[in-house]
Image (cartoon, rainbow over the protein chains, first blue to last red):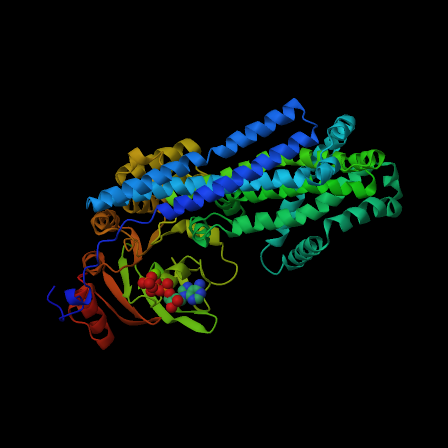
Length: 365
Length: 247
Ligand SMILES: Nc1ncnc2c1ncn2[C@@H]1O[C@H](COP(=O)(O)OP(=O)(O)OP(=O)(O)O)[C@@H](O)[C@H]1O
Ligand SMILES: [Mg+2]
C-alpha cells in the first residue's frame, strides 16, 4: 500500500518483552491448605456420623470411605508442586517456552486440587450440619424407620400425583393450543376472540395456582351441584389445566413468533395461504423450539400437583403429612420430596440435553 | 398494454414515505432492471408487486387486471408472480426436493409423482439434481440460491421478481446464478429484477430504472443509462459503482 504515510508505524508499537511463565508455587500452596482443611472437616463429619450411629459398622465404613475420597485432591496438588519445581528448573536453564508449558500444566494440576478441595469442604460442612446437635437434623428429616412405615401409603398417594399431572398436561396441550390460535387470529374479525384469550392468559397467570385450586375444588361443587359426586382429584385436574393452559399458550405463541418473518414471506409468495403456511412451514419449525419450554412447564405442573393437598385429596403430600402428625417427624414429608426429586431430575437433564443439542446445532450451522 | 403496469405507486412505513409515486411498465418477455443506492426502495417495490406489502396509493396491474387493493385473490396472484429473495429463504426443515415440490402439490394440486418428476427436471437444469435429498443448511449460498430460483419456477410463474439474488454470494458463486437468470431471459421469461451487478444489467436488461429515494429518476435502455446518464445523481451513483469495481 502506498497510501498516506503513517497509519501504522513500528515506533508506535514497540515489540513487547517475552512474557515470563506464570507463578505456580503460590497456587499450589493455597490448594494444599484448602485440601487439608477439607480433609479435617470430612474426618470430623465421619466421626459425628459414627457417634450418631453408636459406632455401627456400616456408618464407620461410610465415614472411612468419605475420608479416603477427601484425600484424593492431594494428588493433583502434589503434581502442581512438581510442576512448580520443573518451571524454575527450566527457567534457570533459559528454556522459556518449555518453562511456560510446565507452568501451565502445574497451574492446571493445582487448580484441580483446589476445586476438589473446596468440594470436600462443602461435603464436610453438610455432614456437620446434618449431624450436629446430637443428630437433631437427621432425626427431623431423615428418620429411616419413619420412612419404612410410611413408604407404601406414600407411593400410593404419589400415583395420584402422577396421573393428575399426565391427564392435566394432555388437556393443557389441547386447551393451550386453542388459546394460542385465538390469540393469533388476524384482522378486526379476530379482535374480540383475541381479547378474550389475552385476558384469560393474563388472569390465570396472575392468580397463584394454590388460589385457583382452592376456588375450583371447593367452589365448583357448590356452584355446579352435579360435580359433588366427582372424585375431587378430577376438580384438581380442572384447576391445574386452567392455570397451566395460560402458560402453555404463551409457549406456543412465542415459538411461532420466533420463526423469522422471511419464512412466512417465502411461503406466502409461493401462494400458500395463512393456514397452509402455519401447517407446512411455521409449526414444524416451531415445534422443535417449543419442546424444552413445554417440558419445563410439565415439570412445574408435576410439582404443583402437591397443591391438591389443601383440598385433602389423598395425594402424596396429604398422606405424608398424616404420617408426620402420627410419628412426630417430618421424615415422611422428606420422603415425598425424594419422590418428586426422583421423577423430576431425569426430565430436567433431558431438557438440558435438548437445549444443548439445539445450541450446538445452531453454532455448527 | 404492458404485462405488468406499476402506476404511481406510493408506500409509507408510518411517516416515512419509501415509494413516492413509482411508475414502470414491463412488457411481456421483457427484462427490466432496478438499480439504485441501498435504501432507495427497490426491495419494497418488488414486495409491493406480489402484495407482500400493501401499497398506500397508485395501482398495479398484471395482464390488465388490478392486483392491488381489497378483494384480490392473493394466493392466485402469487402463483403467477414468482419472487426470489436476497437471503434465499429456503425452508430449513425440508429437503431440497421438498422445498421445490411444496407449492405445486399444496397450492396447485399437482399430484406427488408428477410434481417430483418436474422438480427433479428443474433441479437437473440448474445442476442441483444430486443435492435433491440434502437440507438447505448443507448447501453453499450459491447452491441455495439456485434451489430458491427453481422453487419459484416450479409454480410456472408468468413473471419473476428477483431481489438482489447475488448480493449475499461469494464472487466465484455469482456467475452460476447469473447464468441461470441469463438462460431464463433467453427463454423469454418476463422479469423485474433489482441488482447491483451493473454489467449483468447492461447485458440482459431491455430497460433500466434508476431509483433514488423512492422515485424513478431516470429510465431507459441500458446503453443510455450507463453510457450517457442525464441526471447528476445517476452519474454520481454510476461513478461510485465504477470505483467499487462493479461495472
Ligand atoms: N418494514 C419496514 N418498516 C420500516 N421501514 C422499512 C421497512 N422496510 C423497509 N424500510 C425502509 O424503506 C427504505 C427502502 O428499503 P428497501 O429495502 O426497499 O431498499 P433497497 O433499495 O432494497 O435497499 P438495498 O439495496 O439495501 O436492498 C429503507 O430506508 C428502509 O429502512
Ligand atoms: Mg433490497
